[in-house]
Length: 132
Image (tube, rainbow, N blue to C red; front, side, top):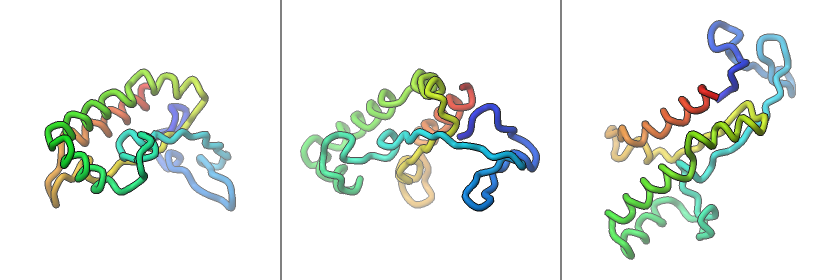
């Protein structure tokens, strides 16, 4: 996601690389970014837990607390860890790009079956970034 001062249409809307420089049109662009890792891509170190694959965490949690508790935890975490206000604070830092990693399971729950709720989180992030 790129800041508002970058054109959104036409050939100049695409970033290019020339040597070690990123260009917007013919002008150098200096990206200052922020990573929203841990929000939509569960990473154990964020929770001070072993950094194992998502599958292992989910299996162990379900064994100990049940599937309904896991669903409630994941929903609560995603709804509260990053919110619209955070994008305003990010803008205040002078950031002009955001890295938004997400686990494919957020949107594809089974092969060719997609979660509207999962896509909704990505839509929120894009909308919030555009607003800032």
